[in-house]
Length: 318
Image (cartoon, rainbow, N blue to C red; front, side, top):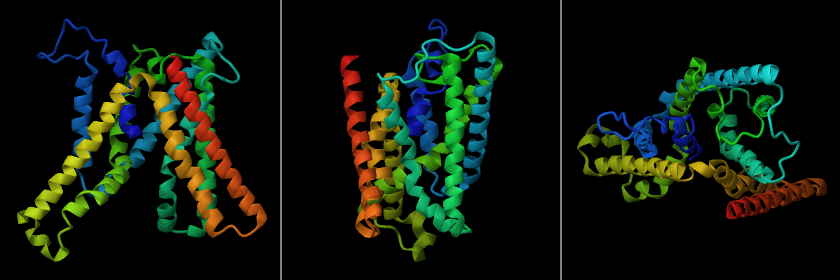
């Protein structure tokens, strides 16, 4: 969901929508965000139709390299602006009016916690996995803290939701940066959406059209059940993509608050509450372990309530 939401309204689409309306291309209204949405849906749906996601392993690594390049470029722009103009405007130590939305958005980053166990099982040295995980989380956290702090100090309390919108739009490097972001999101989409597709199809398509036995692989393309199964899966993947695209366009003006709300409602229980409850019921033996589990459950419940209430109150008063 997040990859589509960000892609629809992320890299400079608002500026693209400001193109001259008197110069249409073959009758296509380039000022309409839905035009870009349709293009994105076609591209991402085509990628989602690929069944073997192992083909995208190298693209995911490449996307991470591009992401690091993007963060480096933005950090350089931030340092240059700091040295030239000093601190940005509207800086505050704690933004009390919207800090809980930030907490919900931060929790949203735990959405990928479900892949930890599969990664540990596939690891060549599972006994070292905890150390690897701690090092990875510390590296990512430190990188994001430095990156976010630099951008905030340089540009202050910016009104734009995307940092690319505050950079000098005429610079060729900024234009390259926007292209990099688009490429990152395209390359990341097949792996990101795969869990959603797999879960949805397990409870729908797999029950409607049972999988064809392997011994009949040679006649699959002539089998009606196989064709129905294949195209029903394609249709479901198109449905997921277009649903996310619709939400991305309609919620574009409050995208940060929406993602913060989703993080509080869904990622907090997934990443914090559920593991703590499972550990409490299955593994916790000592009093300290039980207290730690209960504390995590309490903190996650508190975060859910505060994030949801403050986000909804903010939207109601806006």
